[in-house]
Image 1: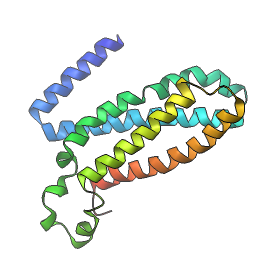
Image 2: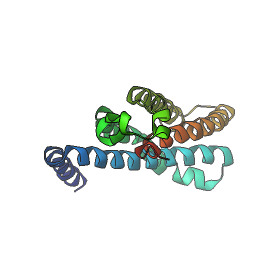
Image 3: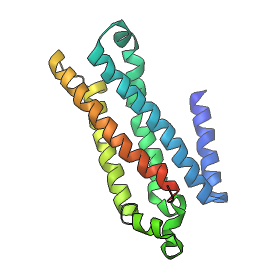
Image 4: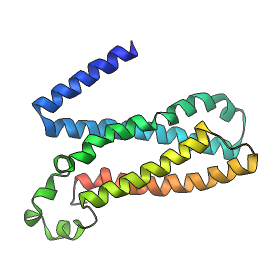
Length: 173
């Protein structure tokens, strides 16, 4: 059943790209943000569980690991939005018509710079998923150190990522 639903969703996405490419790119961005958010939430819960211990951490580890391991799905879903950033970030094509405050933000919101920051955040997240969920370190102190540093890395990279892809949709923020 899940494979059938996924196939139907893929067909509808292709139809959406044929009928209204701009709306399809925006919809794929929304789907990507949803999947990335779920996976990163699971990753954060895994690291918090490592720091706090307790029975809840061991009881939920398998499910949280599966959710965190789905991060590549969200990152792949982000590719259409990255490739067609002009459709998502509509104001890039007309910088001369933008207000003065928007023009001052254009260097930071440049599509290449935006994509570079996104790739760096994705690499950080994938490495953390690899070590925290898929290939856990053997000693407890090493796992705790990874969880501590990982929580800080996720917090900083998620702040940057969310500013870039959610707030930058409206350059007047």
